[in-house]
Amino acid sequence: MAKAAIFLSAGSAEEVTRLGLKIYLNGKYVDVRNAKISIFDHGVLYGDGVFEGIRAYKGCIFRLKQHLERLYASAKYIMLKIPLTLGQMTDVVVNTCRMNKIKDGYIRLVVTRGPGTLGLAPWLCTKPTIFVIADRIKLYPEEFYKNGLSIITVPTLRNLPETTSPRVKSLNYLNNILAKIEAHNSGVQEALMLNQRGYVVECSGENIFIVKGSTLYTPPVYLGALKGITRDCIIEIATHLGFRVIEEPFTRFDVFDADECFLTGTAAEGIPVVKVDNRIIGNGRPGKITKLLIKKYREITSTDGVMIYS
Ligand code: PMP
Image (cartoon, rainbow, N blue to C red; front, top):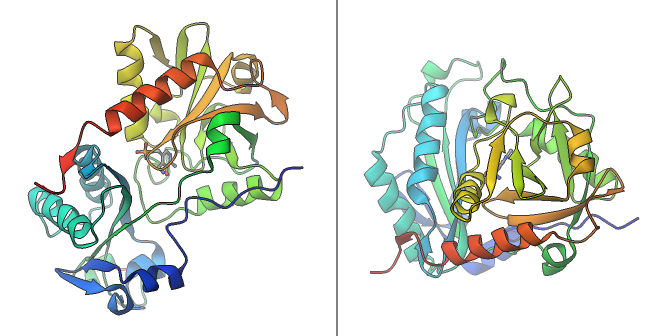
């Protein structure tokens, strides 16, 4: 069985330190070695916080506005007031990229409830912690794009929409982490997650699409998926190209019966899936429509975004 690869790492702690990275931390740009937060930070103690993963391409930050809007919406849901305006946060992200001379890279923006007591009480946390890391990105190996991924359905279900909304991009990623471990333990790269009714929801870090004929299907977010920004972009591209895109619940039956399947996410972009639960999807090769959409997505990412360097 193929060994699951480790990818998407922005570098080990040592590599990052060696790079002399500048981190935005609570109003200051500090060397990565001095970027320290309190062990009483509720982001650490309870996963109480929200985050975004954003990409820069050719000196432009892709869909920054959408990422920031999702961050503020996530924060609002958990009743965390971010002490910066959207405009100020835009400047912080752009400046962090500039300070690290990022042209093509990955940005991690985190807002936690901040330091507090050992109890849960978020109202005793006086000041949210904000940090931004802008670094180079190690992409998924090209072979995954060329040959497609093998994924499996994992036993861990996606968190129910009736619990903390899965639409919140919160620091509580254990649901996804367990799913990722289960996939890794089975020697594949990604985990297909279902909800409690057996509907396909998404993968541990990407949304999912299937293609049947010239129609694309993706699960509606109310089933428990994150409203992916790449997902939205792919829907726009596909619609613009004249494909029908239907957001409706479907099951593994529909996945096995699909002609094509692919995943979408900021880090992965679009990535074909050729095997699910050891069953071959379509003809076992990345599909034509999948390849076209990935190509168009890549064209858009390099021509659209907030400029880092003016
Ligand atoms: N679902 C989950 C659970 C995610 O964490 C992500 C982001 N990594 C996505 C979907 C894809 O979202 P986006 O396209 O906004 O990166």
